[in-house]
Amino acid sequence: MSTTIPWDDTVLPFQLDASDVRGRVVRLDGALDEILGQHSYPPAIEALVAETALLTALIGQSIKLRWKLSIQVRGKGPARLIATDYYGPEEEGGPARIRAYASYDAERLDEGADPFSQIGEGYFAVMLDQGPHMTPYQGFTPIAGTSLSDCAQTYFAQSEQLPTRFALTFGRSQSPGQAASWRGGGIMLQHMPQVGMAMKDTGEGGSGEGGLLDHTDILSGEPAENWNRVNILLNTVEEMELIGPSVSPTQLLTRLFSEEEPRVFPETEVHFGCSCSEDKVRQTMSIYGAKDIKRMTTEAGVVTADCQFCGAHYEMDPATLGLEAEKARKEAEARE
Image (cartoon, rainbow, N blue to C red):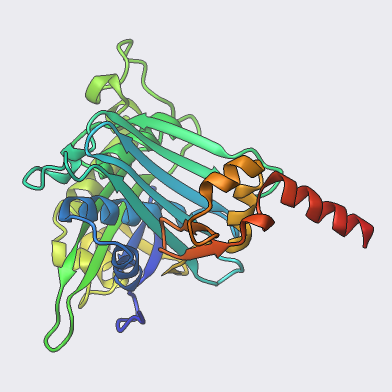
């Protein structure tokens, strides 16, 4: 789906020079529409996927070229898993790619309840893949607060001791004469690290839920005053400004933070994109023996696989799959 507004499907980094705060503005419409259009999720699951996708785009924008950032939300409630991937641009100035999917128990789902409550006890995880021969980074924080945005804020406080704030909104919108489509937008604020900035020693853990860290455990003095001031300004933002069909990201920053001296940097386009392929499916199957492959073979005599992110369907000859087939392939390559 092509965008009709220049700032749709973009993440704009910025810095508030007067308060030592950095941030990003995200706008997703076509990408979010494609993510949710791959599935027929119930409204509660759509809301969780939409919120996680916005968080992923905001957090992922800072990763380097060709790196991958993933967020996983796992719970014991009806919403068992929300998984997202953000692929950094292949080259400087190129677009990033994002994908997402959810696993849920439809029979246990309470559509009348708050979507966040459907996760239950669990964890919020951020994973960073820096490429071949590099050990992936993984960070976890318990499901806490009243939203996935709260979980992300707690993650940054716990894992990196960086006060962080998210303001997000999303939903289906419809312009006259056009079909309804998804739109989402949001702002991420983060206090910049400072020399000597460290967690205050309260002696009793953090001030947040369950003893988790909060910004009050990390900041004091002038940095705390700056952080509180920009958060008060962010509290004045309106939902339609965040979604932004008539308000550009730069206009929004000027409206909210004009006295904080906002400075913007080059934006990153974000497209829906999946990394699945038949070769990757074959690689996954290469750990199985002939008996396992036989059990996977359908009555039609093929092995099938479906991508949970984009719905791609693959059909493969079982004789070309598994340990034995991979060994034969490598032997043939060695003889050539």
